[in-house]
Image 1: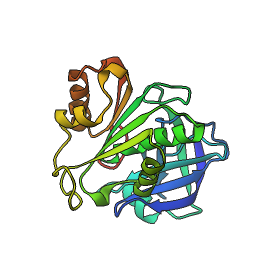
Image 2: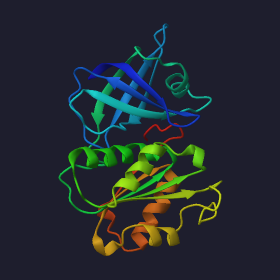
Image 3: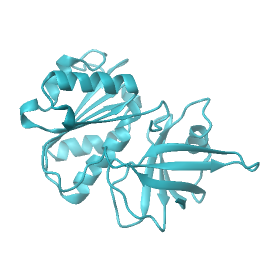
Image 4: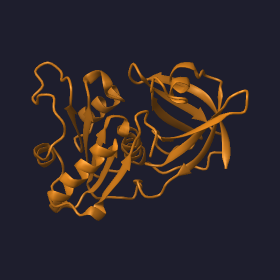
Length: 243
């Protein structure tokens, strides 16, 4: 079923990524980790559909947020990140998905691992934990090319400073801040062992990002003793579109 949402807010997360807030009057609600399809239709009738994760926590205001990263030659992401304006109307279908989700009644430790725009559904999980008053201990390992590419930077910093049960670790792959403790490099088995929950705690693990990143990280987790049944994965395309 397609619904119509009105753009009520825009926020640039980085130089190439934008969060879009939509008011959807007949929104039925969602669970953290789910996604929506967005359909754009040109005057000549041509339409394009892309899937984007929901970034917002479930709420009673019928508002939905998505964060989109621009692909220069894309059909949909340039419009959503450069041209869409407050008051515009977008077609949505969803929420979709029931596997890569976190529910507020879960009490076990949670390990989140994001690669690039794969942070979006994980941010929904973090925000849902906060809004529900859940106290389960969380850890986030966020792999990103450089400091300027971090989504939700201020929110994540404030959260990690205010809530000791949420630990955020960054892995910069191309350029790190001055005096950073770890040189730019990809996530490896040693970093997984150092900063993620140990397998004996049986945490629920959520891994999201490009396919090679997700497969590599899932293998590291499994090799370190984590049960594959406790490792949930989601793959992203280059614009933040779900695969």
